[in-house]
Length: 144
Ligand code: TYD
Picture 1 (cartoon, rainbow, N blue to C red):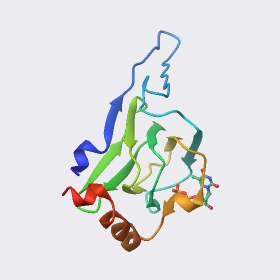
Picture 2 (cartoon, helix red, strand yellow; picture 1 turned 120 degrees about the horizontal axis):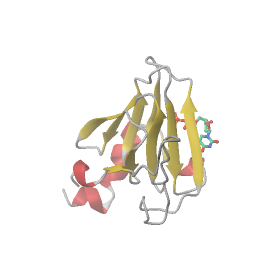
Picture 3 (cartoon, rainbow, N blue to C red; picture 1 turned 60 degrees about the vertical axis):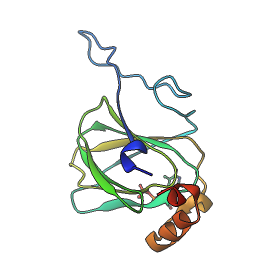
Picture 4 (cartoon, rainbow, N blue to C red; picture 1 turned 135 degrees about the vertical axis):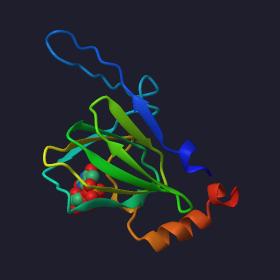
């Protein structure tokens, strides 16, 4: 499968006015393609750390740097792409079964993550070779 057809960059509207900006993200197809079951955010990371380094078998994610910047390297086992999250209205949608690294966090980075599922460590693949092996068994890989 072509990586460019797997992730999506979504530009959210701004309902702001003279009082400031207001960005709304509704789930279930309104703004993002899934129903939001979990929210977490990452801050206090820096330019040295690499987070993520896993794939999820089931969960879809939407990432937004609501403050500051970070980079996400998305990999589907065949292709990879680095996406810079650098504005609060920019969302990065990630489907299941892509490998992701988050890194190069600015000091003021607050990375908001919306997820389609509750946390379940059993659906994480944390070894890249295991990820490649599992991809090899899926239809997506067979379509290549
Ligand atoms: P980790 O997966 O390493 O975070 P990241 O993907 O951002 O690098 O998670 C760090 C710890 O937090 C790990 O022990 C699992 C736990 N955790 C939860 O309990 N619930 C969650 O929703 C997340 C994302 C992590």
